[in-house]
Length: 266
Image 1 (tube, rainbow, N blue to C red):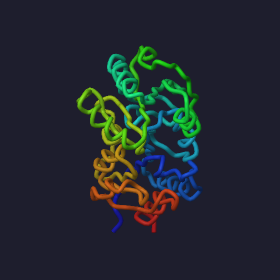
Image 2 (cartoon, rainbow, N blue to C red):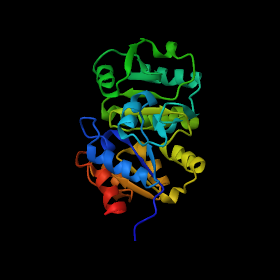
Image 3 (cartoon, helix red, strand yellow):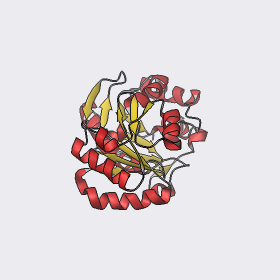
Image 4 (cartoon, helix red, strand yellow):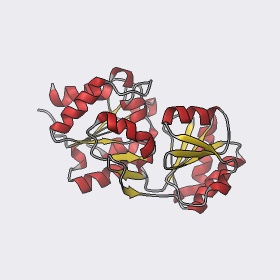
């Protein structure tokens, strides 16, 4: 007997997207078939809305767009429904934390990201995100308003150390996560994909027990745990796989689409 699924949520990078950051025709077809069957389609990423918009358009059937690790929930057209922010004074403390460690750090507004160090990190992020990078030098001085997210980048071993130090320094005033080994993401305290999924469930009228969610990394864990059917990608982090979720094929194998097809439609 096939499970009753009312919503499907999924990460983008290393989950729905292939390594070249494209979405296959097979994946689009399966998601649209699910939508036509009355299932809500919920892309959920650490990306901002402006960085997700092209993917939402490609899918063509998104019901909501969960952005910035759950700090923002938007309509597919970009209308913001919910937004959580980090107060400016806390954001400045985070920027100072990065500066004291000589670490790259950036924040966001609209279709731009604002960063403190010129170099490979900024160039690579601009290329992968489709956002415009603006060098501001001292990010602490730049931050005069609340923000939904800050992102630090460093070698993985430094990220591990900084994560522990940031947890000790900031406590519950922010939410910390890592979507890639060289990312340390800083969000408002309640901003997780799992919390955003629960907000969508309440407002859209589906039980979390009838939600299927896909992800590959630490910032996806709250969503995989919140959903009745949590699925880790075959290319996902080994520590996430060991948490007891189902495992599907890799992003290169259209793992999301093939799992949905097998469980719901075959």
